[in-house]
Each structure stands twice: as structure tokens, then as C-alpha cells.
Length: 276
Ligand SMILES: *[C@@H]1O[C@H](CO)[C@@H](O)[C@H](O)[C@H]1NC(C)=O
Ligand SMILES: *[C@@H]1O[C@H](CO)[C@@H](O)[C@H](O)[C@H]1NC(C)=O
Image (cartoon, rainbow, N blue to C red; front, side, top):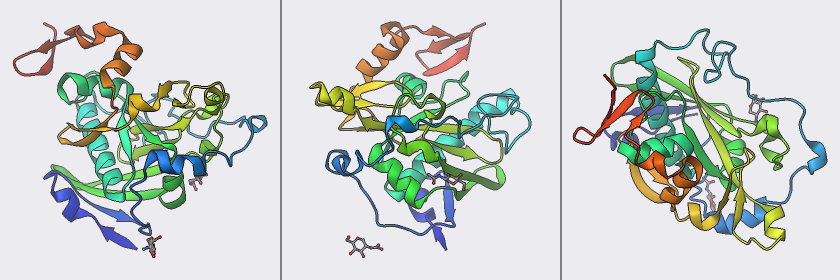
């Protein structure tokens, strides 16, 4: 089946897309709190920690998927490709009703000017545990074609779900990435991690405890309710306590230091410019 989602995406004035090879399930505007209880228990025990890594990175660069590329992009092509990568990801998740938000370095770059840092070569997003189940069930290996301004024939993106997403333990250190959104034209991808209920901490009385397999820990009230904003000119969700989360992860100076990675933040243009 072929579904056109171009009308919705045209609202953003940037993209048009068609989703190939997927059945359209019911819209699941999942409420994190209500579905959490149903999905949290039925997983493999900690005794079944995988011994193999599911996702592989290319030998030439750890931010590329070697199945789709044999060399990195030229430097001046990286940011435009990352921009299209996050725009197409956010548009697709929004149109299929999958809750997602930006985190880590991507959230920090949003904090400054709602744009990707010019020196970045990766993007980080999170999803809730019900969402990873939903994506695994209905959208694994789906291909999403986007017509992009100035790109002949457009680009095809693939959503791939790590089968080890069902293993909830931090001990599964080979599979901390739960899913990827991959640009098949360049091999660049977005790492998607699921935020899960932290059973161990909850058993010790921390009722709001959340965790990711990559060993990041949060409280529900730090992430939810998500806030609405824009990133790379498309709608995005932001964790509720973004300042606190950024200060915890990068230190307060990351929010004030205008000299970073050979770049200066220009207060007038709101852009990071190469230091002369
Ligand atoms: C969507 O869910 C409702 C309620 O569960 C159900 O009645 C309906 O058939 C579903 N629609 C599709 C397209 O699956
Ligand atoms: C997704 O599909 C790939 C390719 O068929 C497969 O290796 C992987 O196990 C699937 N993931 C899930 C969650 O089923």
C-alpha cells in the first residue's frame, strides 16, 4: 500500500513525502502514563543479555551506516543532510502519531538557535517505551520517500528497529540504541533511544524514575509534559525541564559559553560563525 502524507507535510512548506510499504494503523496518540503499565513487564530477564551488537557503523566513520555509503559526505554537505534527516524524521513521527523529542547535543543546539550546530555530525532523539513497541510492530524497515527542495529524485529514509529493544537492561551495552532513522543516500542516521520506566529505582521508592539503556536517568516530571517548539524550521517536542537537563549533562557553561568548537555565537545573526 502507498499512502501519501504530502498534504500534512505541505503545511510545513518544506517537504512532501510518501510512505511506502506500510499499513496505516490507528493513530496512537499514546499517553505515556496510561500505557506504560501495560508494556513494562513482558520482557526477557536480565539473564538473556544479547552478546551481539545489532546496529553496525561503517568502518570509515561511526556516524554512517556502511550499508548505504562507502565514504563520508564532503564537509559542506553534512549539515544540509542532517537538516533534511531531522526534518523528515520529525514530520514522519508526527504524521504517524509517534511521540518523540530531541535530547543531548541536539537539544543543546536547539537551545542556542533552534538549528543544528555547524560542527555536529549526529543527532539524538528519544521516544517513550510505548512508542518503540508501536514502531516495532508497524513500522520496522519502512521506507519513506521525500521530495526535497534542490534534491533530484528526493531521498529515501528507512526506519529500523533494533530487535533487542525488548531487553530493558542497561547491561545490554551493545544495544543501547533502540532504533535508527537512516538516510539511504548518504548513510547518515539519527540514533533513537527509548526512555523506559526504571523498575529497579521505582522498587526503591523513586516513583518517577526513568532510564535509557545508554545509562541516562531521568524523572518523569523532567521530560513530561513535552513542550512544543521548532527545530530546523519544523515543529519539534522538547523535554519539560530542558534547562535543568542540559545543565546536568553539559554543565551550566554550555548554556552561556559563546565560543565553542572553533565557532563564535553571533548575537545579532543568532548563528555560530567560524572563529577568524
Ligand atoms: C481503530 O481503533 C478502533 C477502536 O479500537 C477500532 O474500532 C477501529 O476499527 C480501528 N481502526 C483501524 C483502521 O484499525
Ligand atoms: C526489523 O527488521 C530487520 C530486518 O528484517 C530485522 O533484522 C529486525 O530484527 C527487525 N526488528 C524488529 C524489532 O523486529
